[in-house]
Length: 417
Image 1 (spheres, rainbow, N blue to C red):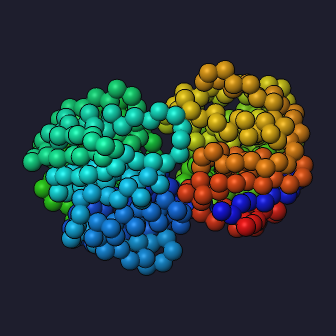
Image 2: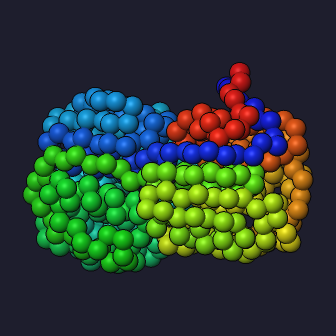
Image 3: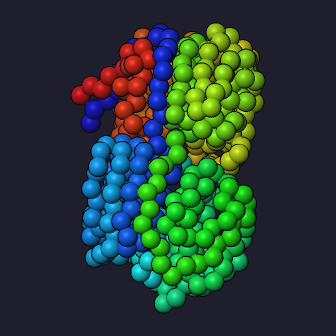
């Protein structure tokens, strides 16, 4: 297994372009199964999760052709199987979107319980609740989720907790259901709006995506579509934090600044300069950022995916900061690894107290999940000496060419055997 080798002490400077949104792309690819007509998806990120989803499509008998590194042509006119293989499904949690897509198109799906990052309990009960409300029968046997429906009928569905995955899965099934579906307490993430725009381009009738009430009028058939995936706000936030932590000067392009409002607000609160344009922004680091308190919430709150990264930045702040994790209870697993680098962090339940003005030192660390891996990269950039990161397959699941992009900004980072 390769590892990442980082030599700390570099100030990042330059321009970086952001790839397509991982959390949108992993939903629009399964959504393409809802139509027998050709679909063309642009601006897909060139990451491992996308490659796995394409492998699943091919296993199901769907034709896929890469037009270039980020544009995929999908022809799902013939689907030969409705059971996805465990060996692929276990690699990413978003494989559960095949439930809603296959159910909506063919009335059945057999999906192994999905894998992905270990962030504590992440039940799919809201997904199942929504599909059952639409008329599906769901059985879980020996780790296999079996979903069946002779007919899907629109329903009024209230989600007990805000869930991006459940909101999208219900949308996928409901667009082919008879009648009207209303999803209340729906998630509002930009990626949900992107998926809804793609479905509407195919002929779906979805209103309210981006609010907490989504209304869907089912249609009998969907057609083909061309769709360009939105920019990845979490990748953009990663480079923003990296620029701030290294005291750098980085322009981040091909973004939607509105999606980054909570991150921009916190950086400015820390005294870091953020200049915002139409589709780009510039981060000018501050050698003495101020401590702040952060609470993660579903969008438009501060993203849980940014929690581990901003924690690294706060180790350099003036004073102590408090981070409260309100989304995933198992999302402090990176703390012990950061302590190996000299960070002073105390965890109490869902709260972490981070002492600032701490000089980090290079050390061997293990990427415990996708975003933690990116946090360790930032920690390595500001640490004294050399940092070696193992289990980097987590990082490659969600970041396109991260070593190349950071190197272009002046980082000393490379993959080693």
